Image (tube, rainbow, N blue to C red; front, side, top):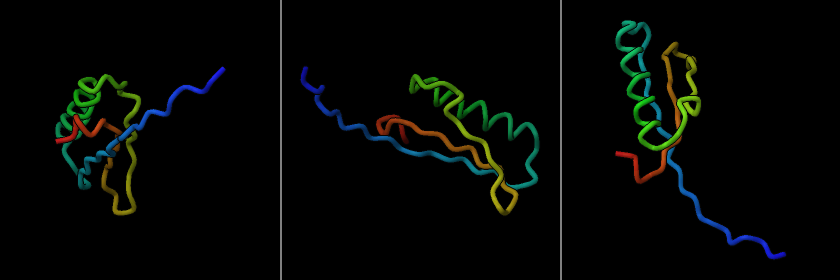
Length: 70
């Protein structure tokens, strides 16, 4: 049995950063936008990671195909 050919995969890491404090409607709109971008790239919303950085900003990071990056 031979190995399958290697396929080159390119990914782009995207992030959206919201300063603290941010209004709740801005946070919700940001998360909705990220979810829509992931859905358009056929990725689950669970691919996004939400963290708080050292300065207290809310950071939403996710991976997209570079063809989907704008």
